[in-house]
Length: 454
Image 1 (spheres, rainbow, N blue to C red):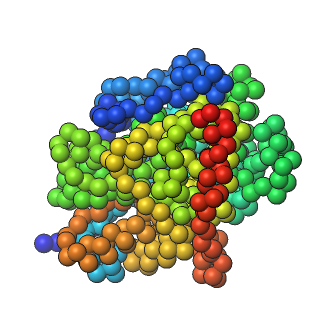
Image 2: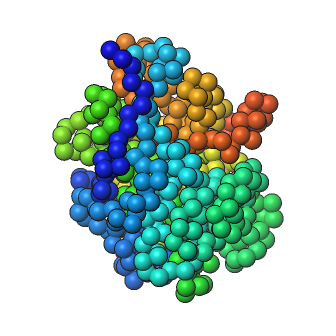
Image 3: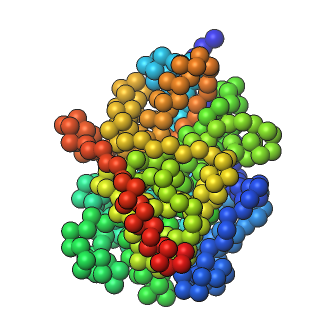
C-alpha cells in the first residue's frame, strides 16, 4: 500500500460552522464577574470592549455557529490547512505510533491565530469600529490581527510584551508591514504601564500587563474596541475549525486519534484541535485523551488553583473562574512568549477540573530538543510554543513503546519558527535556561487573591 503523507480537503469541504463545546459540556463554567461589584456581568458590561456579535458568541448555547461568508472567503486564502503524517519523526522515535499533525503554520501570519483574528476583525468592521487595541506575547497574535485588520481598514495598536519585543524583532516588522503600531509593554502610554514601571523600571513585561494596557486604551477611546487572542469563549470557538477539518482528514487517512495534543498558553490552539474530538467523547463514547502542554516555568494547569482571578495584572478585566498562578505572577523570560500567561480559559479550566482533559508541563530545553529532532526528520521548523506539544508527543511515543501498545497521536502544529531563529541560536549556543517556579512563589501570588476575597 502506497504511503500517503499529506491529506487535503478542497475549499468546498471546509467547515461552514464552528463547534460550540458549551452546548455539550456536562458542567458549564461559572460566569465571569464584574471586577468592581463581583456580580455576574451582562452584555452591557462587555459592550465597551467587544462588538455585540462576539458578546453573543461568548454566551451562545447552540452546538454549531455559522461562519459568515465574508470570513469563509478570507479563510480560503490558506484553509483548509493540510493534515500530515509524520513518517520521518515516527521512524526516528522507533515506537508503535502513528503521528499526524495539523499544519497551522501555512497561514499568512504563520500560526493558528488568524482563525480568530479574521472573524474578530470582521465583526468589528460590521459594527463600524475604526480602531482596535490588543496585546501580544511572542507576536503570533499581534501579527495575525495586524493581517486581519488591514483587510477591513481598521487601525490597530499592539502592546507587545517587552521581553518578546526585544527577543523577536521580526514579529514587530511583520506587524508594521501590515500597518499596525507596536508598543513594548509595559509602556509610559498608560496608567497601568506607568504604575508597573514605577515599581520595576526593568520589568520584562507579561501578557497580563499588556492586556491591562490594551484594555485601558480601548476604554479611554469611545471609537476603539479591544480584541483578545486566547482565553475567552468566542476565541476558542473560532479555533475549532482546526479540529473539524482534522476529523474529515483523518477519515480520509482511515485513522482516529487515541491522543490529541496541543501546547497551552491561554487555550486557543489546544481548544481548536481538541474540542471537536472531545465532542465525539461526549456523543459517541470515544475515549480519546486530550493533553494540554504548558511550560514548567508557567504551570497554571499543573500547579495553579481553580478560582476566580483577573485576566490582567492591574485588575481591569472581568474576573474569570480559571486555573491561575495569580494575576501578579511574573513568568520567567522563556522564548515561548505565547505560553507566558498566568491563567487559563474558563472552558478549559472547567474541563480539566472535571477530569475530561489532561495537563502536562515540560522544560524549554526538552521542548527545543524535540523541536530540533522534528525539524530534522520532517523538514519544518516549529515555533518555540509548538515544540512543547512535540515534546509531549515524544513522551507518549516512549510510553507506547514501553507498554507495547499501538497508538495514533494527533497534535496541532500551531505555528512555524522561521521568525524565531534567535531562540534556536540560543539553544545551539547553550544559552537556553530551564526555569522552575517554587511552591512559595505560587502561594505568595495566590495570597493576593485571598486578600481580595476571591
